[in-house]
Structure formats: C-alpha cells, structure tokens
Amino acid sequence: MSTRPPSSFLLKNGLTLLCVDQSKKIAADRWSVCVKIDVTIPVEKKWFDNNPVDDENFRQIKVALGEAVVFQKKIERHFISDGNKAQILKEIWDNAMDMGMKYLSRDDFAAKYILKVFGDHQGSH
Image (cartoon, rainbow, N blue to C red; front, side, top):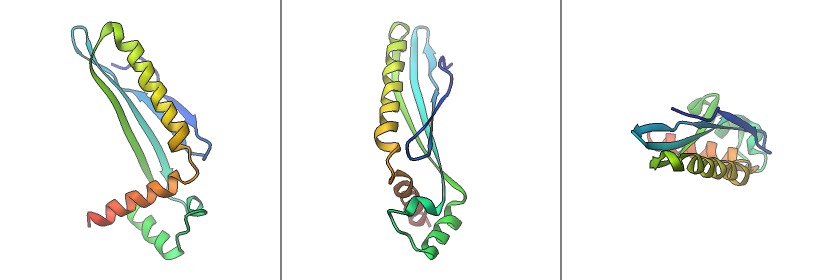
C-alpha cells in the first residue's frame, strides 16, 4: 500500500490541506499511484466577509450542509512500473502542493466551495 505518511499543511486562508498516499500494487511490478487531497471547511459566516450572504441564506446553508463540507480530490496514475513509482509519486505530490498553494489557499475558496456544495445540494432536492 502507501509508502508516504499523510501530510497536512496549513494554508494561508486558515484551512488545512491533508495529503494521503493511497498508492497500491496492482500487478507484480505495476502500481496505481494515487494521492488523495482533503480540505475540511467549517461552515462559518466568516468565510463570507467578501462574498456577502445574508443571515437567512446562511442559516439555510448551515441547515442543509451541517457543520462542515469537505473538498476532496484524487490524483491518480495507473500501471506505473516499480522503477518509475517514486518519481511519479513525487510529481503527483508536488502538483497537489502546488494546487493547495495556488487554488485552495485563496481567500475566497471556502465561500465559493460552500456555495457550490449548497447549490449542488439544492439541485438534488
């Protein structure tokens, strides 16, 4: 299974990025190399300072979504040889960190993601 311990990084917006190596051997010398990224976002009014949501809309969001939402992404490469696994894992890990620093750490990420999840939730009901 995985060869790298989970790592967490505090993003500049106060959220925590968790990266987990979920790589697994799929054949004698082949791997499915996978890194899972999680960012748990507490559903809090503070995220909407620059994206105003009135109290009633925020109450509806909180009722619908609960205490937190989780952004998740998996980055995978399949059928990787033993000899290439370490390099591919490093590239995926580096890409995950880059995404965390550029996209997930933006000040408006939490508000936009909460609104996206809420919109998806509303669309499914």
